[in-house]
Length: 172
Image: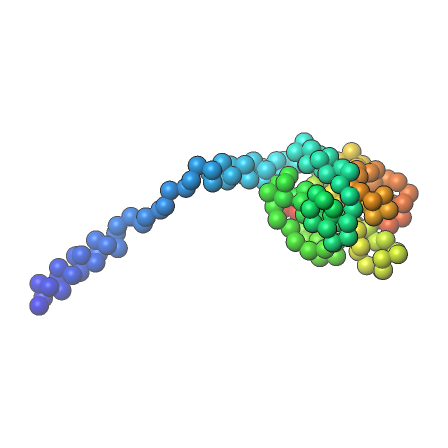
């Protein structure tokens, strides 16, 4: 009986020391992982090239309240799509919920490409009701209900200055 116990102990200890099986990663997954890491690094560097290209690719897409595709989308869906395509990050929520993410940017002069900019449009109630993505150089991308499409606009226009509610910085 002691011999059986010793043999069992040797066998079990060998199993515990055996290397764990790691399934191979398909080549496509490695490429995706590299691409996402490159996007993350670009965001952390404040690289605006990819961000601007992605935002420009949406210019002219029709505004549609509640829309979530290039057939039509609203301001929060545009923001989520830009972040997904430019940085590989999934955001969720409407403009009020997005306003809870990240950290506040204290002054417009401190905005960086990728910051989310928020507005209070009085016709839609007292709270946050519109969001866009700051692209740098005083410009931001947003889905404009009044123009009926996605546009890139100057942040300094009197309309937006009067309704500016703040900005949030994500992951920096």
